[in-house]
Length: 329
Ligand code: NAD
Image (cartoon, rainbow, N blue to C red; front, side, top):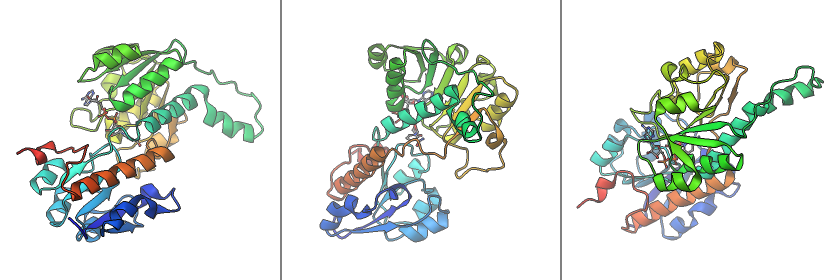
């Protein structure tokens, strides 16, 4: 295919002054690349308007719903410049003959580092001390700083990110346990991780961190029932997708000291409802869905999405197709 229109929403490439650098190879082949300076969260109608002439999109968090895909007959490929594809209705994409790809593994390192940012901020109370020292408070209140060494980290979802988190935790001399519906025993043995049930993980872990995709099974996997099984000293972390936590129940648990603290990067709605009580909790460390935004990760995910589009337009199967049935004969 040549002279196709490729639409790119810009929010995820704003860090780069020269945004066109990523798309030169596509433009040199005669394709038109539209870099759209649009907000991260568009309505369905706004999205249809923007992509109705596009053959390919390099996707951020926009809502690729059934309604959108039914109204964009030119669209042939959605290349997500990220890992989670919960903003794309995959069965509808297949029905509408649209290939969906993601950037598997391209931002895992960034998310794993972000998790440690949240973890160490929580245990060493860095954000809190940073605020207080600027007000002239020199150890007037001495917070108890929680160690990582010899503590148990429980990983829900031992995939690309979960494995990197486990490796890094070992450098802190932590014990690592994991729960996953698919058990990669070889990696677990290599890193030194023990698979346990979800219940065991909740009971044993000092820190619980979620690295699962959002699916009907993972929605609210961290809920009141699971939180009540945890130690009162436990911390919970979510850098996966907002609905993996039942945020109301996590907030209640933080209020009632059922657990000690939380670190959260992702929210049930994004941008979130800022009137939610989580935003008043002193024992929560909160970031605005930045886990995957390491500058290297952003570059890698865009380059990967461009390669997927390029391969597709040349009639080749992209390397990370989500709806694999599109290539079944
Ligand atoms: P991955 O596919 O490599 O790993 C996910 C793991 O979760 C797999 O091992 C899978 O078997 C497991 N899993 C699936 N359903 C499960 C269930 N019901 N119970 C237990 N385990 C289950 O994905 P990844 O690259 O590690 O990314 C994980 C998620 O992190 C992504 O889906 C995405 O939503 C999120 N993410 C967030 C950011 C961010 O900016 N915060 C960036 C990248 C990815």
